Length: 392
Image (cartoon, rainbow, N blue to C red; front, side):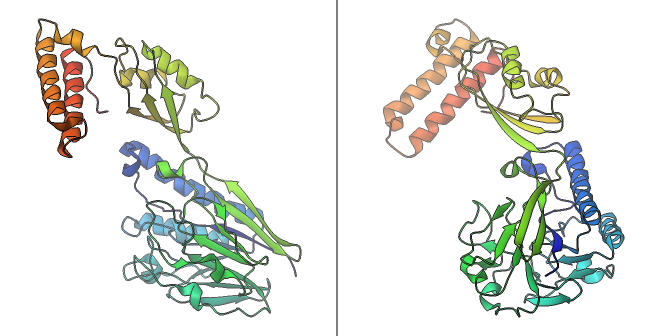
């Protein structure tokens, strides 16, 4: 057969929010523009590489947030791709329902949206391909359509596209949408199955050597469970088999770094430790979550505004997480004839009373109460010592 070339993308989430990642609103706006840019890159690749079609396996946009501007952006981008065909399988974030632009708006002639909760096929005889897919008609879909999918005719190369959950490997915290078992893809004359919903790019182990099934991953990560570069898949199917190539298109990648601060006495030591990550996690276009751990010297003063100023230009944004345990001699402080000493003595007595009443493993309330008292002592001493009070 003549080689068929196509792009598989999914989970673009145009107009998504980034508050869950703890990013400021100004940065959320830049990330949303980065998602658009990543999507333009994907379609540019389809033109440049003369792809036969593009598959979008669901969650192209956020229905509750999508704007008329974004809808027009999509229409223009897709129209400019013609005659390359685009096949969209709506998912749980962009279902084919009343009020959705899929249902209410006219789309360019080269775009096909699978608008029913049942598998339907579109044949491309000039390419020797049949594209089969389904779409969600509600925000939550638990139908097991792969169970009902019969063996497809073998007269054409069969490509399947769907937003669905491999129940053998459900990521933590992820809802099961369009559930299926990997074995349900076998024996149905499927050459390639393009999947969306899980945000990590990965290949499924299908018990049928003739089937390639992949999740494309996200083009641009939106949360700390989507760290690292995002991208899409460029695929080619021919007599020699299926070739799948992962490509990167993300702009602002998220990365986490942990800095152990045992013995640190100045914030310059924090900066020096972080700069050792230059070229890896620390790059000008990266968004960093820096978790500070360990027990530093009492002199360490983490003024995050000053740290941000010192590291300006090293990365796009830093989200600091203070998990430090300050080295405080509570007994010595309690001996002071100061307000700080009076506070330390009072909290120390409360903690001792908690221990006597079962804080070492007695009632279920006591360990929790002891933790609250310990935190109150640390926060209070920070305030009375003139240091910034930060949640730990």
